[in-house]
Structures are given as structure tokens and as C-alpha cells.
Length: 451
Ligand code: FAD
Ligand code: FO1
Image (cartoon, rainbow, N blue to C red; front, side, top):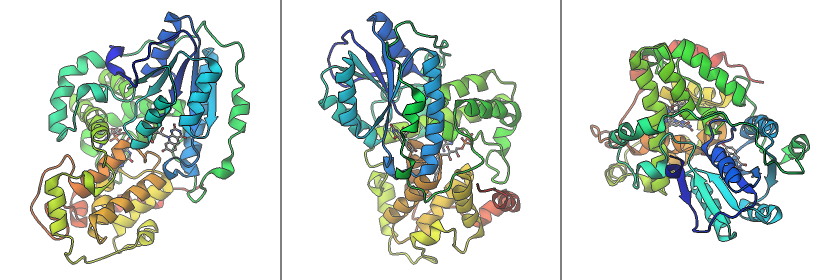
């Protein structure tokens, strides 16, 4: 089955020599097909394995909030690797330079990378590939069914991806054996502590505060999954959309940084004692919807701009571009949660102060940015900027796709035509009040404690 997860960047043969796994999106040891593959090849070629992570301290303008979360998790990963006799190397600088140098220094025979459809990552890999002359294999361990394997094209919507998922899922929903301590270690192990001590925190953007409520790392991720399965899953169908209640899993930051895999979450949910309806609803989100986002970003290079919208959506938004807007806000007013709308402001405060916004409010939040800006392109820019800056799960295919869904009707259909939105699905505060206990949401947001 591993063959279906592999994409070869070149036709070079695997040579004996160190197997390097360039970890990036999937920052965990267990339940990681890319690392397991690295270990298997190393055994087959009697070589050693080395894991590296390239730290780019302005990665897509990420602030310190995200780096703290990521690095805490990575330290845990480095220790776990050390216990398995696998060295971990932290690299600093541009991957297209640092990775070829590491390959030269270690006399490597194979480079492995995990899979990420974001443009920046694909560019890194293309550039690295141009600068090396050894085999380079990408292994998709983020998706339950590998994104390149399940579909060769941009899917139209969830209803076109879902039958493909149903057809193949039995082959891919498989638990992975625990990775054991390896035999072929390197002679000179690298001291992890001193590597992490070298990180220059003064380089990170400190304009965004640390959050107190989401604790980083794999141990915390597994605890969150446990709590969800035991206490929240049961009511996931009925209460996950209630903004004032806490019935979502809260797993997205851990999934974003690969501290947890969606496959292990699905395996645990399948085994749980909960109504089948709740299990199905969760699996729809973490499997079908999540993997649809990777499909969108992989095959639509304009996933972060209006260019990426379907023709019907571009046409209707352009037809309404000169419609009068009742409110128009500059980016600062959005960022400061200073609009006329108490629910929108609460959603923005939740994002800034907790590092994550409730899933239902995210749709409302993005749609109102469309309604209160001059153009859909501006709305896309503001929503992506705020989401990536404050949300611990931002800078992710799910984020770009969720924003394109809200503002540009991606994976959605045309609705009744109205001001500004044209045929894009509309939402308003009356709907929120009718469906949910919005006072409970306001209370929840006001109770978030800042560090
Ligand atoms: P749960 O309801 O517990 O879902 C479990 C997992 O399923 C999530 O962690 C996620 O991986 C997946 N999932 C759930 N809903 C969706 C969805 N609509 N699309 C794709 N996958 C989904 N998700 C992010 O991970 N990062 C983002 O930056 C992000 N930005 C968004 C912006 C907007 C405007 C919208 C409308 C949605 C966005 N989402 C994003 C999708 C979704 O809202 C979040 O994944 C979810 O709220 C995360 O919370 P949770 O893990 O508690 O969700
Ligand atoms: N990936 C890296 O390989 N190196 C980094 O320095 C890095 C920083 C980073 C900061 C914030 C963030 O949200 C993500 C970051 N990632 C980094 C990438 C991340 O692991 C994801 O792969 C992508 O953002 C989305 O899939």
C-alpha cells in the first residue's frame, strides 16, 4: 500500500547511504508513513536514517505564537526519535540550499519528504530536486487516502470526492505498527537540547500573544482526542455547530502541525461507543472535507485568490462589485474587532485571544468580510491575513478552502441572488440568533483568559 502514497520527484535509483526524511507537515514519529518508509528503506539497504526539519523563521509570515506551538511539539518529537536511535537535525535557512548540503555531508542515498499541497512547499521540493542527484520520494501521510492517488484533478465538491473515498477507504483505514528502536543508528548522535537552544527567538514576529488554552505537542493531542471521543463525540451531530458550546474536537492545530494524524483519530472514533450518526458526521469532516481541501489546493494554484473561484462565482461577484455596501471597514477595524456587529466582533476576539475560532462562526466571519469590503479580492486578502496571523490552525489547505468556500462559493452551489453576494450563499445575524444561544457564545468569548 505504501507505493500508493509515494510520488517520485525524479527517476534516480535509491542508493545505499543515509536515508533522509525531511519532516515538515507531519511532525510526529508514530503513525507517520513517511518515517516508516524511511526506516524500511534503511533496513533494506543496510543504511541509517536521519530526520531533519528546516526552520524558516518567517514562514508565510507566521508569528511567534505558531512557532512556539510548533517547536514545543518538535522538541517532543526529537526526544522520541532519540529514544528510537534516530538522529534529528534542525536546519536553518532556505531548504533548497540546506537540504542538498545535508545530502552531501551525509552521503545520502534517498531523500524523503512528506506531502503538502501548498505552493511554497511544492516550490521548495522542485528547487531541492533541481539541486540534487539522488532519489527524492514524497510520501503522503497527511491524508487517509493520498491526495495524488485518489484523484488526478480538482474535484467539483464533496459529492464528487465522497464516492471515491467510499470505494477506497477500506484499503486505507489501517492502523500502523508501532515504530520500534532501530538498529542502524549513526555513530555521532546530535544533542537535541543544544540544537533547540540555538533557535533565535528574537527573529520571530512578537505582535501576536501566546495563547493559554491550547497546549502543544503530541501528548496533549492524544489527550484531546481521548477527551473528545469519551465526552463530546456522542453529541457531535447535534451540538458541534452551537458556538457557545464545546462539542467540536479542537484537534485542528494538532492536525495542522502533524502532531496527530487524521487516520489515528478516525481509527479511535470507529472503535468508540457513540451513535453511528455522530461517528459518521465526524468522519465526514476529518476525512471527506479535510481531504477535499488538500485536493483543492493541490490542483487549483489560485487557492488563495479570487482567480481560483469557479466562473459562475467570479461572474456573479463581479456583477455585484458596485453594489452599495451598508458598512465598509478597513483591515485595522476588522483586526481590532471594531465593527457594528457584536457577534462578528466576538468571533474576531475569540480568534485573537484563543488562537482558534468556532467552526460555525468562521463561515459567518468570512462572509461578513465579503459584505463589508469593496471587492471580493480584498475580502480574500483580509480573511487570509487574519486567519493565518491568529489561528493556530491557519496557513493550512483547510483555511484557504474554507475562506474560498465562504467568499467564492468553492464546493458550494449558486443560491438566490442578493446585494453584494450575488449568488454566493448568504448568512446573517438573525440566522445566528434564531438557531443558537448567542448570549452563551458572547459569555464564552468574554471568559477567555490571556497569558
Ligand atoms: P471538528 O469539527 O472537531 O472537526 C475535526 C476535523 O475535521 C478538523 O480539525 C478539520 O481537520 C476537519 N474539518 C472540520 N470542518 C472542516 C471543514 N469545513 N473543511 C475542512 N476540514 C474540516 N480549518 C483548519 O484546519 N484551519 C483553518 O485555518 C481553517 N480556516 C477556516 C476558515 C473558514 C472561513 C472556514 C469556513 C473554515 C475553516 N476551517 C479551517 C475549517 C473548520 O472550520 C475547522 O477545521 C474546524 O473548525 C476546526 O475545529 P475542530 O478541529 O474542533 O473541528
Ligand atoms: N514548515 C516547515 O517545514 N518549516 C517551518 O519553519 C514551518 C513553520 C511554520 C510556522 C507556522 C505554521 O502554521 C506552519 C509552519 N510550517 C513550517 C508548515 C506546516 O507544518 C504546514 O505544513 C503548512 O503550513 C500547511 O500544511
